[in-house]
Length: 259
Length: 255
Picture (spheres, chains in turn blue, purple):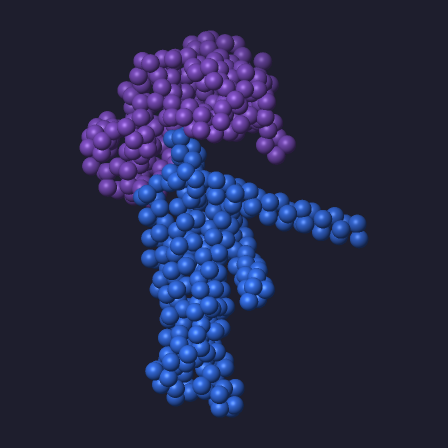
């Protein structure tokens, strides 16, 4: 019993230390944003890697998501002859909830993991030390560009992904429920889902911020060579996923309270 | 130029360095030697302010690292050039960009001047025409030479070469030491850590030997060779150029 409590206590302290470390890293990143002195080339490279190389996977994820939403609801909708609600149902769930969360999780698995691996490798191969010897602050040079790129690009990717999710939903509705594209589009427009769309975009930016902080933190704190990089990537993906779901819940509660 | 007083450092409960007192002057080329794992690289990182010691202090140009703000530390680090044991070349940059990086970051030269300087330095290290390649496309010896070019292009007053010949064949190692000698300026301080004492000898004026966490010897190669101390004799004698901790511990038994 005592041993179990000791193990649990140690684990709780470890988790609190981790949360504290991530919170401090977040504050250091915000501090590094002012005054703006980040490298333009490195920022551009971050935008390219984070955004341009991610859009295909986001489009695919979004289209499948939209299609699955319609497939899941299809049986019930057909049975209750409520096909006029398909556009609304697909739009509502995709835009405010499923779209940003799934795109965020996909983004964390691809971009976040890659970012942790890249920074971790730079740490173990002394590239980060080399930057510091050249009087360059790794926070300014490496963390800040990634932080900005992930916030901006996840916002844009969610905006793009939402459209493709609706396209996926429209195609599936047409094939499965025989609803024409124009009817589906008019249902989405009539549902007046601008609030949900904006809410989804805000979530996307917050997810981007969370993934950037978590993935950079685990990358910069790598210890123990190549196996350490592997462990850090693993921890980064898990922590990012928890962060995404926690932010989703928090924004949901705030949105519900404000409404 | 650099003064270390009572420097000590531990990792995970293991004491690596203890009570290290050292002074380095302008114009010197000093070899830092000792068995693997004794803390040579750690000492180099402490001297250039990358690692904070647990005890003692290091002053560079009369300024203690401990008393400096983050900005002041960064400013002081501009006076160092460093060649890392694992090359530490930025793998997302080409050879030319890597070598140009210190000058570009300093921002006091035109792009054309930087380019000319890069070409000149790469020619000096016998790597002309590889500007466009990435480090992954180079051999170990070529990477070391690129790292050497990057460490010295800024003409910093203090250059640290951390094991510049690790993992290289004897011919390439000799070439690297020759380049270090060629690139040495009379007003700069160079610190070289290596196990390759034989090839260091023409380059270094004096040596510091670290052993069992502290400074075991300081002096010239000649003094070390003439010493009756069994550890020094094993290390500088030429029979065992690269000795590990166990060998050194064994040497203590030699009467």
